[in-house]
Image (cartoon, rainbow, N blue to C red; front, side):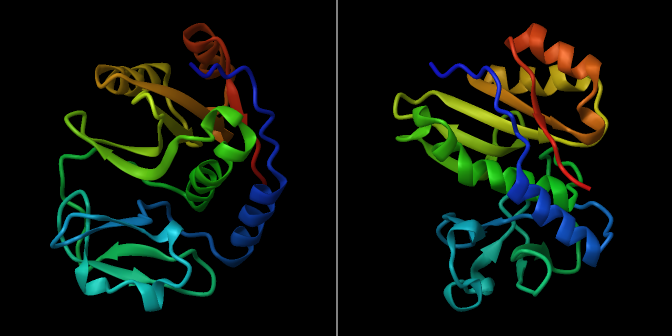
Amino acid sequence: MVYFFMWKAVIAALALSLWRKSLYTKRRAAFVPFVAEHKETGERIDLTQVMNPKTEIDQEQCVCPLCGKPFTLRVGLIRRPHFAHRGSECQSPYRTHPESAAHREAKLFLMQHLRSEFPEYAGATIQIEVKLEPIWRVADVLVTFPSGWRQAHEVQLSKITIGELQERTNDYTTMGIDVVWWLGRDADKEPNQQWCIETFGYSLSLQLTP
């Protein structure tokens, strides 16, 4: 089993990326997915694994993994390539939450760097935005080890109560999935840090700017 003691997450590259984004836009937080589903095969279509989305992905085959409605592929100069619903919001039983640009960059950074930072992840499968039934949640990052053991990495930047942290943790536990919480900004407060220490034996912080 992998034990986490402390990753000093003063992430310069991530911080710089978020700082640059803040200069361009101050958008309202929303759930902006990187992952679609092929409408015929059900296969995951992960934009983070595609070099040139415009030429490699047929958006007519992309639907929302949560509600099945058609997706539009958006590729621009400022925001990362992502999917969006066509003219409607996602209506599904999955419990998603608005995500800021900082949240999206943080979960992407974790997906890309867990393997290089921790040797224990060398043989694991690491995926972003994985839907989980029957708890109806979407893991920010899901790690599946060769043994079958699964671990969800959750980024939390907005204000959250200990009760909410416990509820989400309990949901994952019912599926046999361990949880690693990465706290930042309004969530990285002493009561939440103390709860993490008492529950897991450690507390992890994401230090983001600005």
